[in-house]
Image (cartoon, rainbow, N blue to C red; front, side, top):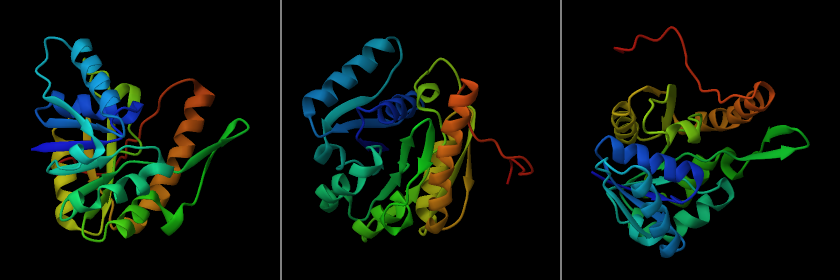
Length: 220
């Protein structure tokens, strides 16, 4: 399985790329700049020498040729980036992990993007793709620390059950992450917005919080 990460040079994208490669996936780090993608890949390979990380580098068009795609760009560039490679994304699962947020004074505030969520806006821009919203609440720094498991539940929303299952299968291979089916794509709006609360907690308590829900049987 080859996974392309659009915007793979940012903190979330490169951390996810490294973590996916660490559990056996082939990952293509995508960027508007091929040179920046190559620099990011080389830095990850140097940092994690001794690990067999199957990391490649490409521009976003090259990354979009992978079997499935994660859009890890900042939220306000997600739709335009995806539209630029929409032909390559046709018929594929596309994972949206962006949160529409702004910092106003000392507070993080959730914004309301077109269609109510970044994921819904991506689905509207990619009608022939299966968009799933996931990975919004996983701390990027911890995700990129491959020597340590990252503990978090991952809420997955999609209008396409096969896309939900695919994301759950991928997430389930990462130690410490538990995939949870959170319903249809309309639920992406509150999931994305809740990230503002988590960031505010991080600031107030000088930590990095993640989401863990009780009352759900892990076997279910």
